[in-house]
Image (cartoon, rainbow, N blue to C red):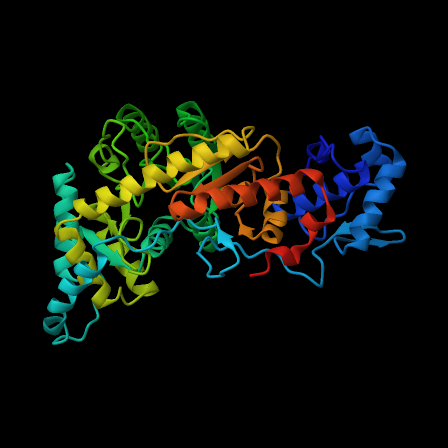
Amino acid sequence: MTSFSDLLPLPAASPAYLGLAHRIRGMVMDGRLATGSRLPSERALAETLGLSRTTITRAFAELVDTGWAVARRGSGTTVRLPVADRAPSISLVPTRREDTIDLSAAAGLAPDGTAEIVARALEWLPSTLAGAGYEPYGALHLREQIADRYTARGVPTHPDQIVVTAGALLAVSVALHTLVRPGERLVMDSPSYPGAIESAATVRARAVPVPLEGDWDLTGWTTAVRRARPRAAYLIPDFHNPTGLLMSTDRRQELARILGDADCAPIVDETPAELDFGETEHALPFAAIAPDAVCIGSTSKVLWGGFRIGWLRCPEPLVDAVRATARSLSLGASALDQLVATSYLEDPEPVRAAVADRLRQARGMWRDALAARLPEWRVPSPPGGLGLWVTLPARLSTELALSARSHGITVAPGSTFSPDRTHTNRLRLPLTLPLDVIDEAVERLAAAWETARSGSRSAARMDALAL
């Protein structure tokens, strides 16, 4: 149920009626107020917010004038999206526009050494061309490499337990299609990876969010699992996306017990696991603690997103089911991409270490620039991962996203990372941004933040986010 008291406090830098209209637009944009919803009567909203009827009347008129609401005699005022504009398309995939700094995606450029890795893969290509090229579960040479890496980490794995997919997002989808039927519950952190949130919706699973703030709340997980009786849980214990948090071995053991007692299958997304800045103790892989875990990995977070290689490591009883699901969704990953992944995994440490060092540098530069220009923003210092999960001093991340494009920058509001559309005071900033762009990005963020706080009309225009 929508809580209209969340509209308060109003921005101090603009007239109350404009601030109220801006707040209502924000509720529509982050999903707390569905399009087509009827707003309370002017009298009722005035009483709820402690504002004058005149302020409410002018705010409703502002919404109607700018296309965000329709008023019909006898039917009240209902919210809508402007016909002339469209909802912002924030796909978290990087866009190419010379005049825009894109902070919506955490995807880096190919690191040094990638060309040599590809050259070695091309040397192997002629032997691969002798076959048909279809490997619905992955080429044996790659599955062996991946299995050996799990075994070296303390999780004994046979190549038949590996299913290679065209990217980690497809691996998430395969796991969900295998384990969760429509209407069943899936428990997950809030915030979490938006791709997993969308995949859960695709399989019509009912997401049950557990707030993640500073560390995993095992009491909250226990309560959620007991009440919801979920079929599966989606976890990112290693340099969590978007927070960068690392779950300790002790917490993994306790969470594995909680899930095991409830017969809740863990889906463990380890795609950020290689992004370790070397500042914390290593934790045991989740599958070393929970043998029933389905683990997901990828090369794209370290090597390059253009190589669409992901995989699942399945417990033996699930291998046939996962293979059947994978084959129903795809005929397998590119043969050439699999050769590149095998070439990379022969000696990944030099590239991994260089990428982690660069991300660590970006963390320091972001923190320094934000401290100087936006000191009221709380900026963490995660021990790894791809981004900074920043806390804003007000619940204006949607308004910031709306205003940002007119300042030459694209951001994804915090609600994008939440299955329950919360975290409206949060923003993810990517560590993958080129180092020489960070200072300019902060300058543009500061200008966009000032616009968002002012509640000006420019922040309301949807075409500011047209891609």
